[in-house]
Length: 125
Ligand SMILES: [Zn+2]
Image (cartoon, rainbow, N blue to C red; front, side, top):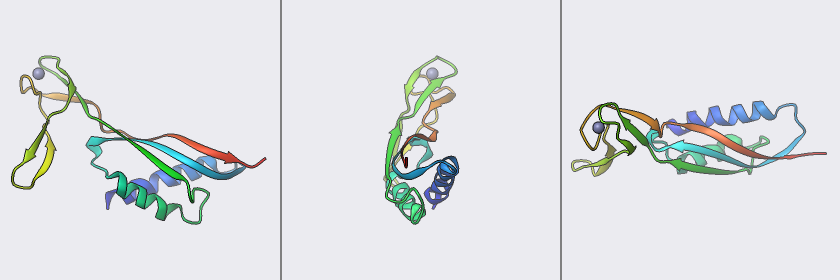
C-alpha cells in the first residue's frame, strides 16, 4: 500500500517538527495531493489514523485537497488540464501524457505534488 509509506513520512515529519514545542495536540492537518500521484485520499486517511495512534497527532483531522493536473505543451504552448482516456478493457480512467491539441510532448506543471500545507496545533501554555 503506497499510501501507507507516504503517510509514514508525513506523520514522522510533522512529529519531528513539533518535537520540543509545547504541543498539547494537533487539531487538523491540511494536505495538497496532486491527482497524478494516484494516491487515494480514503487510504491516506486510514493510514493517518493508524499511524497517529498514541502520538500527539492522534485524533487530528486530516484534510486532503486533490489538485488537478496541469500540463504545458512543448510544441504549441497549450496550457491547461490533462485529458483522460477511459481504458475500455479495464474501465479505468488514464491520463493522456500528450498534448490534446497537437499530440506533442508535454511538461507537467501541477498534479504531482504531495505536501503538508498547514497544521493547526494546540499549544499548552
Ligand atoms: Zn501542443
